[in-house]
Length: 375
Image (cartoon, rainbow, N blue to C red; front, side, top):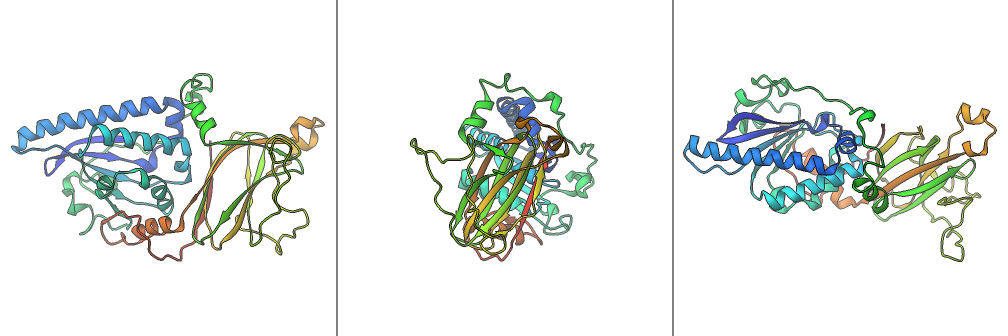
């Protein structure tokens, strides 16, 4: 969903990226990180050729381009960690091999999930490059203070209210039939995905798997990304002011549980609504689903992410013990409240005109939570 228009803004070639319409997970799983990187590098090479041509046409040095990023459709699915990892690697390689080729990056139609994504990736972007990122979160970007201040209306795509006809499809999910298998990716990405950041847990009937996260500041953001590899599960998030008791460990130092990679943190004597409370609506997750989500914490304390076995009709009717088990592969991360508030402020201050993206700290009373299932 990355396009180069053969039109120019002050002589600079213009790229258009409809990131919100991209199935990042599908592209990485179908093409692999290396193929995506090579594609982006080829686009940069094409940009250099355009700059050389325009240097002759306009009679002055032109060595960079403008990039317009449309975020309509951006959702929690875009927080899939291997996709973010691939994006960060692409940014790193491009910054190292094509320095100062980005003249300006304009971001439009940023949804509420954008501050979470920006908080995740901004620390890895060079400060000089980050200063070139401008965002407009309002819907009146066609007026003064919006796109027309940076791009002639004749070059603004029609799907953004401009005069330039642009037959750009809305995209969609990459069919799973095109995904590489684990065997095909055995020596490439799959080991990196599973062995570096993800943990695997078993969930049994009557024995959920739980992860404890200590939060010291309200407005910190808990993010999660997990795949339901086998069986169905119910995902919950709880909050408690007091810490659960330290779990017993075996002679090897591992936490004890009813099976491999299963940990329970909530004391069986605790009473829901008194000792701990539910802070997210329970989410039923089916086998094969991939879930990405975030929760902006309202209070400091202890948050418990829980995966509980879901008794479907098929498993209840089966006498096989093996069906009373679920397996999940998960990753969690906490974003500091200061960083997240800085990203939120950037978004909230850009409703009447383009403003520079920042990670500075300012106050914000926003509270937001969301989760999405994807395939």
